[in-house]
Length: 278
Image (cartoon, rainbow, N blue to C red; front, top):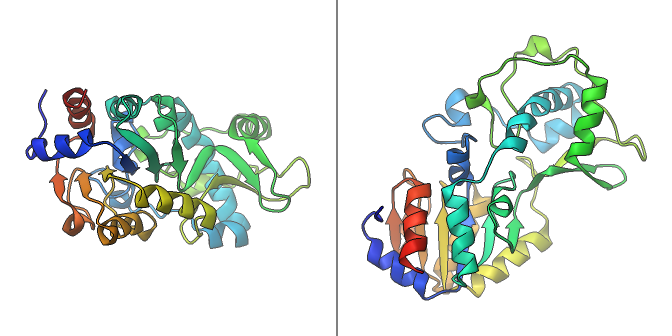
Protein backbone atom coordinates (compact mmCIF):
# COMPACT_ATOMS: atom_id res chain seq x y z
CA UNK A 1 0.00 0.00 0.00
CA UNK A 2 1.55 3.30 -1.07
CA UNK A 3 0.71 6.96 -0.78
CA UNK A 4 -0.23 9.00 -3.78
CA UNK A 5 2.41 11.52 -4.89
CA UNK A 6 3.47 13.93 -3.34
CA UNK A 7 3.69 11.51 -0.43
CA UNK A 8 7.04 12.68 0.92
CA UNK A 9 5.80 16.24 1.42
CA UNK A 10 2.78 15.07 3.39
CA UNK A 11 4.76 12.57 5.46
CA UNK A 12 7.25 15.28 6.43
CA UNK A 13 4.50 17.68 7.44
CA UNK A 14 2.68 15.07 9.53
CA UNK A 15 5.86 13.83 11.20
CA UNK A 16 6.45 17.35 12.51
CA UNK A 17 3.30 16.88 14.62
CA UNK A 18 0.73 19.35 15.96
CA UNK A 19 -1.64 18.29 13.19
CA UNK A 20 -5.25 19.45 13.38
CA UNK A 21 -7.66 17.42 11.25
CA UNK A 22 -10.69 18.94 9.54
CA UNK A 23 -12.89 16.13 8.25
CA UNK A 24 -15.98 16.07 6.05
CA UNK A 25 -18.57 13.68 4.70
CA UNK A 26 -16.13 12.11 2.25
CA UNK A 27 -14.36 10.40 5.15
CA UNK A 28 -17.51 8.42 5.97
CA UNK A 29 -18.43 7.23 2.48
CA UNK A 30 -16.39 4.04 2.97
CA UNK A 31 -18.64 3.35 5.98
CA UNK A 32 -21.65 3.33 3.66
CA UNK A 33 -22.85 6.88 4.31
CA UNK A 34 -23.11 8.82 1.03
CA UNK A 35 -21.66 12.31 0.98
CA UNK A 36 -23.29 15.46 -0.39
CA UNK A 37 -21.35 16.26 -3.55
CA UNK A 38 -19.67 13.01 -4.62
CA UNK A 39 -20.67 10.91 -7.64
CA UNK A 40 -23.50 9.23 -5.68
CA UNK A 41 -23.96 12.03 -3.19
CA UNK A 42 -27.16 13.51 -1.86
CA UNK A 43 -27.07 16.56 -4.13
CA UNK A 44 -26.67 14.37 -7.22
CA UNK A 45 -30.04 12.85 -6.25
CA UNK A 46 -31.61 16.32 -5.92
CA UNK A 47 -31.85 15.91 -2.16
CA UNK A 48 -32.76 19.15 -0.40
CA UNK A 49 -31.38 19.26 3.15
CA UNK A 50 -33.70 20.37 5.91
CA UNK A 51 -33.27 24.01 6.86
CA UNK A 52 -33.61 25.36 10.36
CA UNK A 53 -36.27 27.80 9.22
CA UNK A 54 -38.46 25.09 7.66
CA UNK A 55 -38.03 22.74 10.62
CA UNK A 56 -39.04 25.32 13.21
CA UNK A 57 -41.86 27.01 11.29
CA UNK A 58 -43.54 24.24 9.28
CA UNK A 59 -45.26 21.32 11.04
CA UNK A 60 -45.45 19.35 7.80
CA UNK A 61 -41.74 19.86 7.07
CA UNK A 62 -40.91 18.76 10.61
CA UNK A 63 -42.96 15.58 10.22
CA UNK A 64 -41.29 14.92 6.88
CA UNK A 65 -37.86 15.22 8.47
CA UNK A 66 -38.62 12.96 11.43
CA UNK A 67 -40.26 10.29 9.24
CA UNK A 68 -37.22 10.19 6.99
CA UNK A 69 -34.80 10.41 9.90
CA UNK A 70 -36.65 7.63 11.73
CA UNK A 71 -35.65 5.28 8.90
CA UNK A 72 -32.26 6.83 8.13
CA UNK A 73 -31.18 6.47 11.76
CA UNK A 74 -31.26 2.68 11.30
CA UNK A 75 -28.33 2.87 8.93
CA UNK A 76 -26.47 5.74 10.59
CA UNK A 77 -26.57 4.03 13.99
CA UNK A 78 -25.27 0.75 12.52
CA UNK A 79 -22.46 2.32 10.50
CA UNK A 80 -18.96 1.22 11.48
CA UNK A 81 -15.77 3.29 11.36
CA UNK A 82 -13.64 2.61 8.31
CA UNK A 83 -9.89 2.47 7.70
CA UNK A 84 -9.74 6.25 7.40
CA UNK A 85 -11.26 6.82 10.84
CA UNK A 86 -8.97 4.21 12.38
CA UNK A 87 -5.90 5.73 10.73
CA UNK A 88 -6.73 9.19 12.09
CA UNK A 89 -7.12 7.66 15.57
CA UNK A 90 -3.75 5.93 15.16
CA UNK A 91 -2.09 9.21 14.20
CA UNK A 92 -3.61 10.77 17.29
CA UNK A 93 -2.41 7.94 19.56
CA UNK A 94 1.07 8.36 18.11
CA UNK A 95 1.07 11.99 19.22
CA UNK A 96 0.98 13.51 15.73
CA UNK A 97 -2.67 14.62 15.60
CA UNK A 98 -4.17 16.78 18.32
CA UNK A 99 -7.69 18.11 17.83
CA UNK A 100 -10.06 16.72 15.21
CA UNK A 101 -12.63 19.15 13.85
CA UNK A 102 -15.35 17.21 12.08
CA UNK A 103 -18.22 18.50 9.99
CA UNK A 104 -19.78 15.04 10.25
CA UNK A 105 -22.61 14.19 12.64
CA UNK A 106 -22.20 10.39 12.62
CA UNK A 107 -19.85 9.90 15.60
CA UNK A 108 -17.54 7.61 13.61
CA UNK A 109 -14.32 9.34 14.65
CA UNK A 110 -15.00 8.44 18.29
CA UNK A 111 -16.16 4.94 17.32
CA UNK A 112 -12.84 4.52 15.50
CA UNK A 113 -10.88 5.28 18.67
CA UNK A 114 -10.27 9.03 18.45
CA UNK A 115 -10.79 11.60 21.18
CA UNK A 116 -10.44 15.39 21.32
CA UNK A 117 -13.11 15.56 18.61
CA UNK A 118 -14.90 18.86 18.10
CA UNK A 119 -18.21 18.10 16.40
CA UNK A 120 -18.66 21.35 14.50
CA UNK A 121 -22.18 20.55 13.39
CA UNK A 122 -23.26 18.52 16.42
CA UNK A 123 -24.17 14.84 16.61
CA UNK A 124 -27.18 12.79 15.56
CA UNK A 125 -27.00 10.62 18.68
CA UNK A 126 -28.53 13.36 20.84
CA UNK A 127 -31.74 15.36 20.69
CA UNK A 128 -32.48 18.82 22.04
CA UNK A 129 -35.79 20.42 23.01
CA UNK A 130 -36.10 23.82 21.36
CA UNK A 131 -38.35 25.03 24.18
CA UNK A 132 -36.72 23.93 27.44
CA UNK A 133 -33.23 23.07 26.12
CA UNK A 134 -33.13 19.54 27.58
CA UNK A 135 -30.70 17.13 25.90
CA UNK A 136 -31.70 13.47 25.62
CA UNK A 137 -30.18 10.41 23.89
CA UNK A 138 -31.37 9.64 20.37
CA UNK A 139 -31.92 6.01 21.36
CA UNK A 140 -34.51 7.15 23.88
CA UNK A 141 -36.34 9.13 21.20
CA UNK A 142 -36.11 6.21 18.81
CA UNK A 143 -37.92 3.98 21.32
CA UNK A 144 -40.69 6.55 21.64
CA UNK A 145 -41.01 6.97 17.87
CA UNK A 146 -41.19 3.20 17.41
CA UNK A 147 -44.00 2.99 19.96
CA UNK A 148 -45.91 5.87 18.33
CA UNK A 149 -45.44 4.49 14.80
CA UNK A 150 -45.93 0.76 15.16
CA UNK A 151 -45.78 -0.79 11.72
CA UNK A 152 -44.36 2.28 10.01
CA UNK A 153 -41.69 1.22 7.60
CA UNK A 154 -40.52 1.42 4.06
CA UNK A 155 -38.02 -0.50 1.96
CA UNK A 156 -35.44 2.05 0.89
CA UNK A 157 -32.19 2.02 -1.04
CA UNK A 158 -29.29 2.35 1.46
CA UNK A 159 -27.60 4.64 -1.06
CA UNK A 160 -30.34 7.22 -0.44
CA UNK A 161 -29.38 7.72 3.20
CA UNK A 162 -28.00 11.24 3.55
CA UNK A 163 -25.13 12.56 5.70
CA UNK A 164 -27.64 14.57 7.75
CA UNK A 165 -29.30 11.34 8.85
CA UNK A 166 -32.50 11.17 6.84
CA UNK A 167 -33.46 9.08 3.85
CA UNK A 168 -35.34 9.82 0.64
CA UNK A 169 -38.94 8.74 1.17
CA UNK A 170 -42.05 9.12 -1.02
CA UNK A 171 -44.47 11.80 0.18
CA UNK A 172 -47.38 9.35 0.37
CA UNK A 173 -45.70 7.59 3.30
CA UNK A 174 -45.51 10.70 5.45
CA UNK A 175 -49.14 11.32 6.41
CA UNK A 176 -49.30 8.34 8.77
CA UNK A 177 -46.16 9.23 10.70
CA UNK A 178 -46.58 10.58 14.24
CA UNK A 179 -44.05 13.03 15.69
CA UNK A 180 -43.49 13.00 19.46
CA UNK A 181 -42.71 15.99 21.67
CA UNK A 182 -40.49 16.65 24.67
CA UNK A 183 -41.51 14.56 27.67
CA UNK A 184 -40.56 17.37 30.03
CA UNK A 185 -42.37 20.38 28.56
CA UNK A 186 -44.19 19.19 25.44
CA UNK A 187 -41.89 21.29 23.26
CA UNK A 188 -40.44 20.68 19.81
CA UNK A 189 -37.62 18.14 19.56
CA UNK A 190 -34.76 18.58 17.12
CA UNK A 191 -31.66 16.48 16.50
CA UNK A 192 -28.70 18.16 18.19
CA UNK A 193 -27.14 19.08 14.85
CA UNK A 194 -26.70 22.34 12.99
CA UNK A 195 -29.16 22.48 10.11
CA UNK A 196 -28.59 24.50 6.95
CA UNK A 197 -29.50 28.09 7.73
CA UNK A 198 -28.55 27.67 11.39
CA UNK A 199 -25.41 29.12 12.97
CA UNK A 200 -22.73 27.04 14.66
CA UNK A 201 -22.53 28.06 18.36
CA UNK A 202 -19.92 30.80 18.78
CA UNK A 203 -18.05 29.03 21.56
CA UNK A 204 -17.66 25.94 19.34
CA UNK A 205 -16.28 28.03 16.49
CA UNK A 206 -13.87 29.69 18.95
CA UNK A 207 -12.54 26.28 20.07
CA UNK A 208 -11.88 25.34 16.47
CA UNK A 209 -10.19 28.65 15.74
CA UNK A 210 -7.91 28.24 18.73
CA UNK A 211 -6.96 24.72 17.64
CA UNK A 212 -6.11 25.93 14.12
CA UNK A 213 -4.14 28.90 15.46
CA UNK A 214 -1.94 26.52 17.48
CA UNK A 215 -1.56 23.91 14.71
CA UNK A 216 1.57 22.94 12.85
CA UNK A 217 -0.55 21.61 9.99
CA UNK A 218 -4.23 21.69 9.05
CA UNK A 219 -5.05 18.37 7.38
CA UNK A 220 -8.37 18.43 5.49
CA UNK A 221 -9.92 15.01 4.89
CA UNK A 222 -12.91 14.28 2.68
CA UNK A 223 -14.39 17.77 2.43
CA UNK A 224 -15.10 19.77 -0.71
CA UNK A 225 -14.97 22.89 1.51
CA UNK A 226 -17.97 24.24 -0.37
CA UNK A 227 -19.68 25.41 2.82
CA UNK A 228 -18.06 28.33 4.61
CA UNK A 229 -18.62 26.65 7.97
CA UNK A 230 -15.56 24.49 7.34
CA UNK A 231 -13.71 26.51 4.71
CA UNK A 232 -13.18 29.40 7.15
CA UNK A 233 -10.59 27.32 9.02
CA UNK A 234 -8.59 26.77 5.84
CA UNK A 235 -8.66 30.52 5.16
CA UNK A 236 -7.63 31.16 8.78
CA UNK A 237 -4.72 28.70 8.51
CA UNK A 238 -3.49 30.27 5.28
CA UNK A 239 -3.63 33.78 6.74
CA UNK A 240 -1.78 32.64 9.87
CA UNK A 241 0.96 30.85 7.94
CA UNK A 242 -0.19 27.37 9.03
CA UNK A 243 0.39 24.91 6.15
CA UNK A 244 -2.68 23.21 4.72
CA UNK A 245 -2.80 19.70 3.23
CA UNK A 246 -5.93 18.30 1.57
CA UNK A 247 -6.82 14.70 0.81
CA UNK A 248 -10.11 14.43 -1.06
CA UNK A 249 -11.67 12.67 -4.02
CA UNK A 250 -12.18 15.54 -6.44
CA UNK A 251 -11.41 19.26 -6.28
CA UNK A 252 -12.17 21.48 -3.28
CA UNK A 253 -12.72 25.19 -2.75
CA UNK A 254 -9.58 25.25 -0.63
CA UNK A 255 -7.16 23.87 -3.20
CA UNK A 256 -5.57 27.26 -3.85
CA UNK A 257 -4.56 27.45 -0.18
CA UNK A 258 -3.07 23.95 0.01
CA UNK A 259 0.65 23.25 0.17
CA UNK A 260 -0.12 19.57 -0.52
CA UNK A 261 -3.13 18.34 -2.48
CA UNK A 262 -3.88 14.62 -2.92
CA UNK A 263 -6.83 13.30 -4.93
CA UNK A 264 -7.20 9.73 -3.68
CA UNK A 265 -9.41 7.40 -1.62
CA UNK A 266 -9.27 8.29 2.06
CA UNK A 267 -9.08 4.84 3.67
CA UNK A 268 -6.02 3.47 1.89
CA UNK A 269 -4.21 6.80 1.76
CA UNK A 270 -4.60 7.50 5.47
CA UNK A 271 -3.68 3.94 6.40
CA UNK A 272 -0.46 4.29 4.42
CA UNK A 273 0.19 7.71 5.97
CA UNK A 274 -0.20 6.32 9.49
CA UNK A 275 2.19 3.48 8.68
CA UNK A 276 4.75 5.79 7.10
CA UNK A 277 4.84 8.14 10.10
CA UNK A 278 5.09 5.50 12.81
